[in-house]
Length: 117
View (cartoon, rainbow, N blue to C red):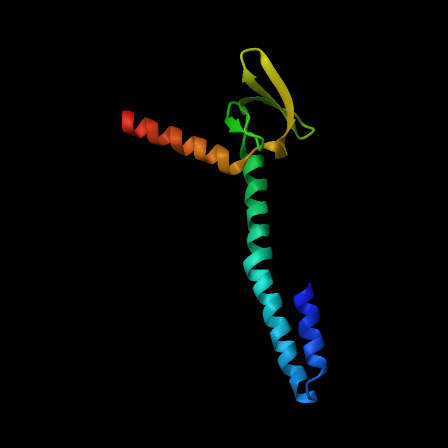
């Protein structure tokens, strides 16, 4: 934010012909911000939402806090019952599933199966 103020103040001392250059610089900064920060974040959020919707009963998961479990039942209110151990079931939000950790766990299991076969 401070960089923006500095650029705006620098533009005030220039001749009238420099206003177009300031506008190009500002548009360039907005474009860089969008393509390198906002757009990838939106894409990642969309992938996380699709992943949590695709996870179903019987899937092994890892939560954002690192707890491993198996989905026993999905509820209609957006929650699910997850078995953490024998006779240890908790109710948690679907949004608590970690996409990265769960995929990493599944890839590791697939590699182990491939090496054992």
